[in-house]
Length: 301
Image 1 (cartoon, rainbow, N blue to C red):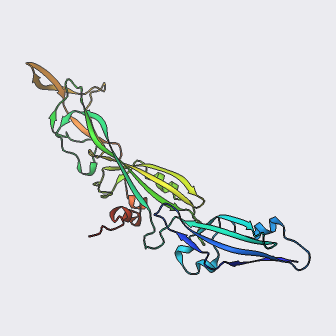
Image 2: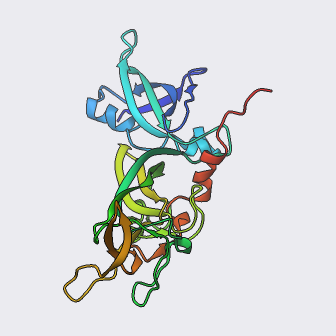
Image 3: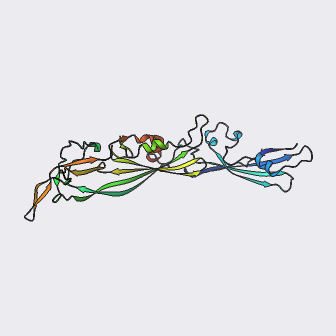
């Protein structure tokens, strides 16, 4: 019975390197031929089964001990018959990866920022903010500052905020030992509604709130993932007036405006809705953040 054999054409191997997260690719060309033991002829199914398959690794004789080449995945296989020779085929294999190859950096990380504001009730102007936004609502003392409400009606104040989006790339290739291909979704979700427990992305402790993630596949073994954080200049605090039994603010004599005495809120405290802290370094790793703090290439002096 006949069989297929293959040899790599000399000088056929080529590379195209790109900046991550774009694909870097290599191309390999083989000569595949059928050797008959009699009168049998190859079937197309047998030819396709013999050739490299998409979504598999390249041949071990190519990657050897090279870690970068080991990340290459076959994406397309082009099989063309050589018409001058019966049962001879030119097989072109294109493989690619989304990892850096010629440097020691292996992570992709980008940061997008947008300024927004949070409209909140302002009862006291110039009140000191609690350290890292940690307050005790029950039994809390008055926050101080200058009263600016009129008969218990607060002014509207726009607190500066930033929407911070971090994009990373996740290789979901199954490891050789313990399978853990998918990102730690439950771990990411557990951080929703938590504030940073230390300075992160330049934001002081307690000012950055994790809001969640979005993920989409970019090919068979990579995800493009974005994590969204919300920075708040007030540590996400809100001013709350002390209420009477009916829920209305307790009013006392306040300022006089245009000769008319105005009642104002007696006591004001801070409310922190996001009381829990989290270490965001388990969401965005130090090696990923390195791409932000040490961008390439270096400037030429």
